[in-house]
Each structure stands twice: as C-alpha cells, then as structure tokens.
Amino acid sequence: LTRWSRRQDEATDSDTAMKNLADAGKFAGPTMVVYVLLVTFAAVDWVMTLDPHWYSTMWGFLFVAGWGLSCFAFSITILALLANKAPMNRILGQSHFQDIGKLVLALVMVWAYFNFSQFLIIWSGNLPEETVWYLSRMHGAWGAIGILLIVFHFAFPFLLLLSRDLKRNAKWLAALCVFILVMRLIDMYYLIGPSPKVGMHGQEMPFNLNWMDLVAPLAIGGIWLWWFFGELMKRPLVPINDPYLPNAIEHGHEH
Image 1 (cartoon, helix red, strand yellow):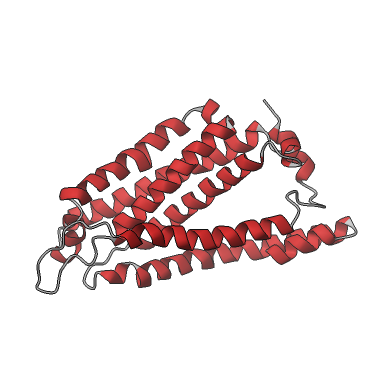
Image 2: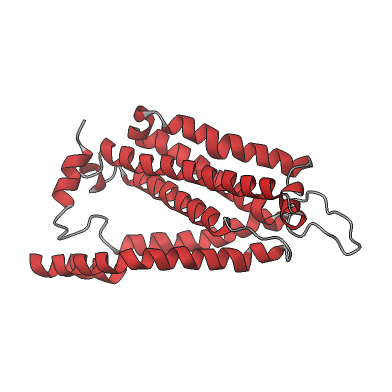
C-alpha cells in the first residue's frame, strides 16, 4: 500500500494516479480478510496458549476489535497533533474528526459486545476448563481491574463519544483517545497477566506487577514510534494526485 501511495504521489498524469489508487483498493479489500485471520492465529498462538487447557471461540474477535480501536485512537491522536500545522491546517476540519470519532465509538461498542459474548458463552456453558479463566480474574486485584475495564474502557468513552461537540473538538477527542490507548494496555495486561496462575508447587499465584510489565510496552512502542515518525517525515502529509482530496477537504469544513 505504501508503494502504491508513493507511485500515486509521483504520477505525472491523472490516469496513472487513478490506476495506482485502484490497484491499492483491489489489494486492500482481500488483505483485510487475511489480516483478521492472521490476528486470530497470532492471538491464539501467543496468548491463548499461555493457559494450556482454556479456549474461547471469541478470542480472535476480541483482538481484532481491540487492535482496530487502538489503530483509530492512535490515528486521531496524530491527526490532532498535526491539525494546526501546515498543510494539515488547511485540510483537516471538524467533520473529519467527527467521522473518525464515530468509528472509535463503534469499536468501543464492538469491543464490549465481544467481551460480553465471550463471558455469556462461558457462563452459560459452565464447563470447568472454560470457567477457570474468569475465576482467576474475578477476585482480588484482578477483579478490580475487570471492573476498571468495564467502567473506563467501555462506559466512560461510550458516554463521552455520544457527544457531537466532543467528536468535533480535535483536542478533546485526542485526549480521550490517549486515555483509550492507556486502557488498551491495561486490557492486554488483564488478558495476559493471570494466565501463569499456578506456581511450581500448585499454589495460586497472587497479583504481581513486575517492572517488565511497564518497561516492555514502552520499549517496543518506542521502537515502533521511532520508525513511524521517521517514515512520516520522509513522505508528504497530503496525498498528492488524489482525485478525492478536494471533496474530502470540502466535507471536512462542513458545519
């Protein structure tokens, strides 16, 4: 996709630009299906297998929804940082942030729906090899984290994103998206942390926040951000030769 985007920017005529855009569109659709499958397999191989006996048919959906939410929250944060700088200050409008904010609202609801669906399926089945996953997350600090996720990963963003004014305010929407990204980290810790719950002698392991739990996301995220901003500085922020750009600019500044 990056290659086609670069070719579109370098195109000397509209026909070549349109061809690159069409090729990217044909590639993007089928690979979305491939991406969902890859996320599902990765989530199963990397996370579900931490508990050798537990399984869930909703597992892949949880990660697809969560990572999609992280993607849009991060995108809004970057766009808000660029919104007052040329050339983005002439392009981005309130309607753009409102539209992407609607997608964030939808993904917040989808994330909650998939989590509730998984809980409902396991609760109604009431099988020992399935219920153990929630039993280890319903007591002590893990139970508090579960309530924290219900309130601040779903209810709080959901209620705020119902506001049209908030979605049209880039600064406030970006602040909420940063908060959502923090909650995404807590959600990942909730999914992974309690899995090695049995010690060497069979005792249940208590809640334990290791320094690596904090450093690892910052280290990996820092490397990724370094690469991301490096690539961002090499390329034009505005898609050159995009035939839909004028309409997008007009839409963004509608009231």
